[in-house]
Length: 165
Image 1 (tube, rainbow, N blue to C red):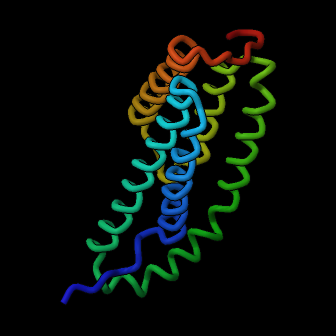
Image 2 (spheres, one colour):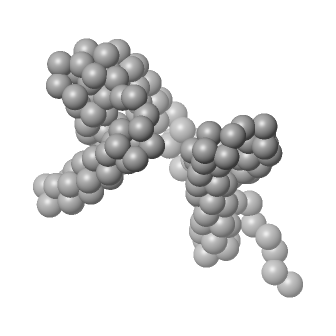
Image 3 (cartoon, rainbow, N blue to C red):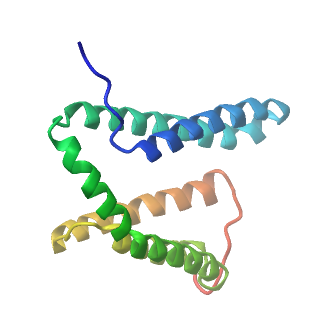
């Protein structure tokens, strides 16, 4: 008999389930919008639902693969990890606040690049080699550039401009 184990990241799984519910509610609310006006909210809500579902599936798959012997040791490591992550949480909040402050000064794209690298530095739990960091940086810059160009040139969202663009 298969026993359903607790998900790998229970708070993350609960938050993902709430985001799925929020996505459904938001899609239902677009019925009152014009067809063109509803494209962006529906797209973002659908992406939020899909990515949240992937996170839930991932957390259950990781839990299913985890050996039972590890569960006793996991409680201690979870406690240590939670207490040790407070500086990361504060660093993330500082990076996000700095991003918001820098957007009107530097412009959306440049401030977002700075925020991306700051958050990447705060979020890295393991040592990253120079090569891995370069690959992550290139991928991040490419994704950020693509999102910026889509929002500014395809969706025609007015982007905040600062000293740069």
